[in-house]
Structures are given as structure tokens and as C-alpha cells.
Length: 477
Ligand code: BG6
Image (cartoon, rainbow, N blue to C red; front, side, top):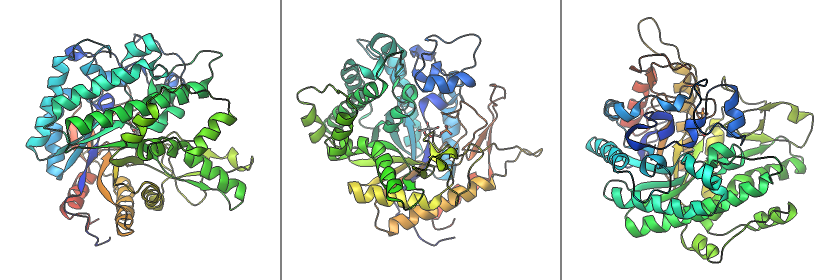
């Protein structure tokens, strides 16, 4: 399949997040973070949406992030496997609460800083470029208790301090940075995205957009600091992408599709173009939202825009204004979508749409005219280990093959893409469901939804497939 060769310097690799992989949730002085309060099971979704969680973990619940896959201790073994596949890049995140356990400590936690020194050194030893997200669903819990998380302006300065600390510390090791993972997630799962919890009577929309404003300013200040401290680095934003299709050519559907896309583009319009778009101002006015902005914010946003557009793509989305059609909804990276009758779905209801990947990449390119970085894409499935200890994940290979082929098409369309880090190259905890059963990896991890298993790593069939893809510069799918 396809003979197209990706550029020699294309950053092939994988992406994980601290909270879903590291475990060691209180080790070496780390403070509690958002995901440490998310149990598996029924409570998880309601907390992620903003219902108040227990602010200290309960004995009666199982919290999968607490041990996750123990990447904190096993990273040398895992990185050696990534190197064997030929990875050029690994996307990780820094756990803010490892560096500042309460988020507002006078001094950073040296043991936490040392962990990431060791991690980055290990990657560089294998010739793997670290790509680092500053906040991947991550806020120290103390900042939620004390300030209400990103609803408060205090977070901007605290985040800036954290960003400057890690830029200064790792300036010789890390050249690719990202500010907030899937920044648009705060509109859908506000606790997961931004540590927001709500009480009765709260004006939820206003709080969400106020928190968004704070994150956007914090992101711009991080861009400024990164450019000053590491002039040869690139720093990007990160969008949970996947364009909306109108269900029909009825202009009402088409217009709604445009509005749904703008809900997400809003963030990147500010981060990449440096100002609030007109449609956002109208939205605030129409919905009576009062967003507090300080003098100087507009200049900060204008002067410190991102160098590249990082995005995740799992599926396209579909929207309709017809009440009958919207009865048939499906999931897809937690963004509600009408089921698309032309497309199949994963076991978790996530639509499979390789062509949508090419469409999304082209649209982002047309809109922003900046390099794109695909920092997540992949297929969550419940793999089975055969009695001879093998995992035949042909369905994953099929998904990835078709998506990589469409990415090659997008490059040939003239879209500049600097790399592709597929999601969860080793099985990790699922963010939306907290399950281990929802696996994305080329490497299987022996651990189940209840936390049982010896954490042994097994190469799946896709391990060999991806190795071949990288070796052939994407020409051998
Ligand atoms: C993205 C997140 O939303 O999708 C990841 O950035 C997440 O953290 C990934 O894991 C896949 O979602 P899930 O819910 O299947 O883990």
C-alpha cells in the first residue's frame, strides 16, 4: 500500500501522558493531581464533567492512575522497545505536581525535576527527541481546593512559573514543547480538561470561557518564556481535532457544522492568530457571558502565538439539526456526534474515518498556514493474548495503515506535517473510561481493569508493522 516516502526528518513516534503511564502518584514528593481523583466505574464520567470529586482518594474506589503501567520505574525498558521500533520522537507530559506538589511551592521539587532529567537523557541516548506537553489533563489538586483551578487568574502566574522552571531546567534537552493538551476539552469534560468543578447556581458556560481565557493567556506567556529561554525550540498548541460534517446539505445543518467546528477552532484561532475571533465575541454577547480580561492581555495574546499546530485525530464528527437524526448519537473522543451511516465504529463507539484525517489536516493547514504536528491518533481495542503469548492486532494495523496513508495524501496536498506520534504506543490507562482494556499499544501490558497483572510487556503484531513503516519512511504500509 502506497509508495509515498515521508521526509527523512519526519518525527515518527508515539505519545503518552504522565497521568496515564507513570503511576508512582505520590513518589518522590509528588502532589495529588486531577486524574489521581478519578476512579474507574460510574463516578468517573460525572466527575470529569465537573461534579465535585472526593478531594482525597477513597479506600472504596480504584484509581487506575495511581500505579498506571509504572512507567516511572520501567521507562528504560519501555524506551528501549520504542528505540527498537525506530522511534524518532516520544511525546510525554510533565506532571506539574511532581515539580510543584502544591502548585505554589516557593521552590520546585528537586526529586521531580531529576526524574525528567533521567527520562529525557534516556530518550536522547537512543536518539529519540522528547516532545513535551506542559499540562496533559493535569492541575495540582491544591490549586483546585484553594482557587477553583483555572477559573481563577492566580493560575496564570503559577503556570508561568512552572513553565519557566522546566524550560530553564531542560533547555538543552527538549526542543519541542506544547502548552495544554486538547485545550478544547475543557468545554466537554471540564474537570479533566481544566480541574473545574461546579456547584448549583454556577454559570457553567461563563466559568468555562473564563477558565479558557486564563489558559489562553497562560499559554501565550509560556510561548513567550519558551522563545526567550530556548530560542531554538518550537512550541505549539494542541487541539482535539476532527472536523464536523453536516448530516445533509440543508443549510441549517451546514451552518451548525461550521459553528461546531468553531467551538474548537476558537482556542486555536486565539493561540495561533493571536486574537479573539469575531464569532466568539458575538457568542459571548448572545449568551450574556462576561469574561474578565486584564489590560495587556490582548497584547500578550497577539505577540506570542504558537509555532506549530499540534492535534489529535481519532475520528470525524457529524451534526444535524433534525431532532429525529440526533436520536442516533455516538461517541468519539467524548465529543458528541450523530452516527455517520457511511462509517464503522470501534467497540467504544468511536467512528473510524481515515479520509476525515486528510480533510481535518487540510482544513487546519488552510486556516493557520503553520506546520502541523499529529501528536495523537490510534485505535482503542480490547486485545487478547493467545495461549502462546502473542497478540494479533490486525484491526489496529488496519486502522493505522489507512490513517498513515491519508496523512501521506495530505502531505502531497501540500500540508506541512512535521511528525506523527501515535497514541499509547504502549498500553496505558484510558483517559475517558479509566480502563486498561481499551488498549492502543504496539506493546501489550499485562494489567487489567481491576489493576491485576504483572505489568509484563509483550510485543504485539503491530510492533513489527510500525517498525517497518518507520524504517521505510512510511512507504511500506
Ligand atoms: C485524547 C487524550 O483525548 O485521547 C488522551 O489526549 C486519551 O489522554 C486519548 O487517552 C484516547 O482516549 P481514551 O479515552 O480512549 O484514552
